[in-house]
Image (cartoon, rainbow, N blue to C red; front, side, top):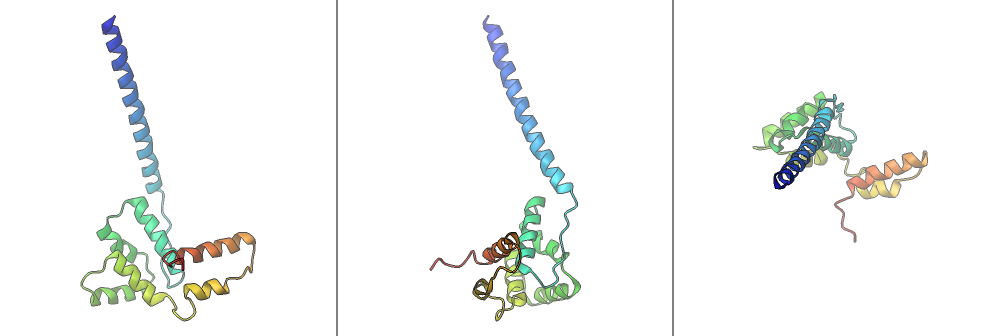
Length: 150
């Protein structure tokens, strides 16, 4: 009787472990499936900088790119003129981290006079469908996430 109970308990433990392995295996399979899909990253051409940076960060997360490799990988997604800018930055800085890279990109490619967050917010008008207008606002909202509430 007691041996039967022990066997049932052992069987339950084995079943739970198999279920856990199945869930882990499925999760790993899903991640590998997502990674194996050809990720279509557009090359940065000097326009739509914030979205390009966000897409690169999503790419890095999906592929588990280590911090020290982010800039090297991102450099592969630069158009020729932007790649020349990147080479210039590398020649003028002893170390170019992802943080430095994005800060320098923003400083170089954002038009400070016409393209500030506040000027874009003030000038945001609905010119198309409501869905497209909401999308435009969301794109703008991403740029303003570091602005204090005051």
